[in-house]
Amino acid sequence: MIMWCREATELMTDDMEGRLDASKSRAFRLHVALCPYCRAHRRQLETTIATLGRMPVEPSSDASRERALAEFRSKKKPPA
Amino acid sequence: MALGPRLQEFPCTLAGVARTAPAEDDAALVERLRAGDEAAFTRVFDAYHALLVRLALGYVRNPSIAEEVAQDAWTAALDSLDSFEHRSSFKTWIVRITVNRAKTLAVREGRSTPYDPTERGDADDAHGPTIPPENFYSWGLWRTWPDRWTGTPEDLALRREVREAIEEGLAGLPPRQRTVVILRDVEGFSAEEVCNVLEVSESSQRVLLHRGRARMRETLERVLKEERRR
Image (cartoon, rainbow over all chains, first blue to last red; front, side, top):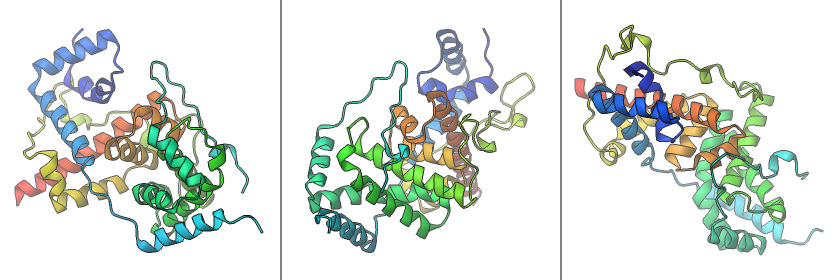
């Protein structure tokens, strides 16, 4: 079974998730092994994923923490 | 506050995927929260609150409403701590509460399409190629070749214009794709955890992930091309 770039590019996530069946997986791997452009495309996707995983997280404000903490404290008190 | 079905832990059954056991320190964390340990609460709040606000923002589109949703989610979680059974991690649980509240609010305020039980979801989540057909010859080979990107993810994430483009790109994704990409690729959740949060099947989760990633790749491609032109 021959697979071309158009199909292979749409199977990138399925492959990464290990969800291709055996024959699709064989055709996909063969295509990617032979096609430098699909390898470049896959590297772009991998770079995208890895960059997303390195995005810094903004810390929460003191005000929002204080507000939640006040709520947390109020729950400790026995109901009036 | 009544404990609706949305607050209960959603058992996500995926063939072939083992359910992850609760982490040792997760169980200890919940015990400390039940005991009213403020230091433990501060730690878990600092670890997750920004993520909760960010996720809520995908549905409600207003930072102060997103903050309210996240605060409400903490309150709801604390109220139902006693019924928390470790069928998911604490993190997945609080994320799930937040996303459900944000979704409900967005639907009520008409800011988003209602949750579609057929899982077809937003129009943007529909099937179809993620790469424009004109990038390929009719028989399926690349017509315009993908560039080789220079720079490691570490380098890219340090560049301000890349970070800004990614934030904008994420903000522009349809809500469910955005949630899946943030949880899977930014936060490192497993597929199973994301299914649990969004109440979707593994295959739907995968479609959302693929489409969201494809759009984020385009975003990165655009910013890198602009950079090279300068």
